[in-house]
Image (cartoon, one colour):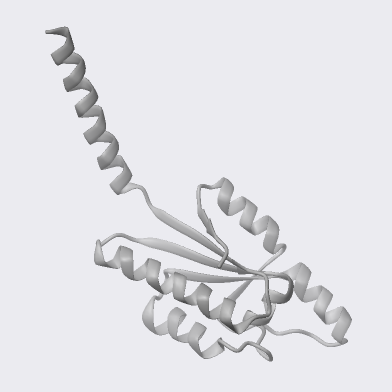
Length: 147
């Protein structure tokens, strides 16, 4: 009798845990720190695939593509090889589901080195530090991917 009660308790806890897992929000941070169009496109492919996966399950997911170092070129208005794709993802395909974060430390360093202001694409948000932003997202429970 005691074994049956214990088994029923364990089984019901398993179902409760599964239900809680299904209700857990999904968040993923994708790091881009290289000035490489293949890496940038891979990051955008990863984001698209994750969104489509959860969309098919009628679940929400938030994505933050965080750029710093040479990867900031992904979000620079004057050098981004993926600017059109970013615009399509942000405005047309997945509004509200994806954010693009640009490291201000890197931007300031580039401005100093190049001697002029560096503009980022309109869909980007400037964060004080890309690395710190990634750390804080992970501390809040976000998953992390580096393509």
